[in-house]
Image (cartoon, rainbow, N blue to C red; front, side, top):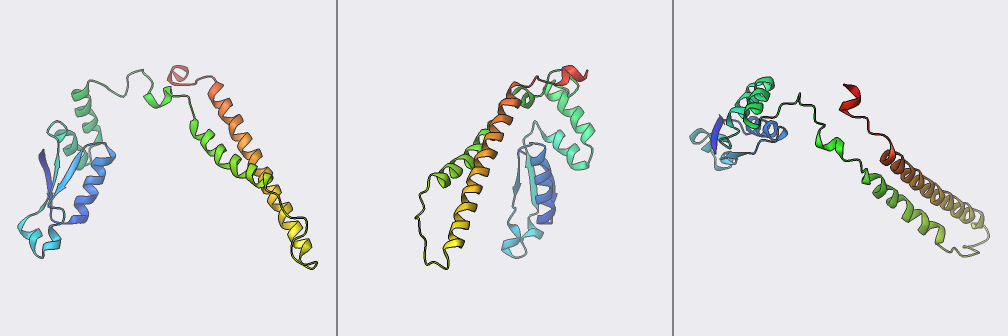
Length: 170
């Protein structure tokens, strides 16, 4: 691990660490809690350390020059963003999240419709209100089921739709 920068302010150090985390550079703050010990920040500043391999990349990012950081990154990995291969996240064509969300609407909808309500609820004065509440609850159950079915149809459509990726746009 190599020290890339030192900071006297904990907020600045945390912002720099979050910036490097956004670029997926493993980094750590040394003496981060030095301010808890009274006047310790004067004696030991907060150090931002990164791996030796990613140090140059991190320095360019912290200087605010991401283009030069990208150039340094391509020399390390040999991969440039102009290559014609599609990103790995576009190759996955399984939107399983739609099925999970549809399950969370389908199950309560079915449970509401399967619930047995008593024929007479409360006194005669409150009976119309109870009937209206049960009718609205059943309506919401059907709405939940229809929304779940529409999500399943959307899943099938997205799954079977032709892939329009980088090859079509080029």
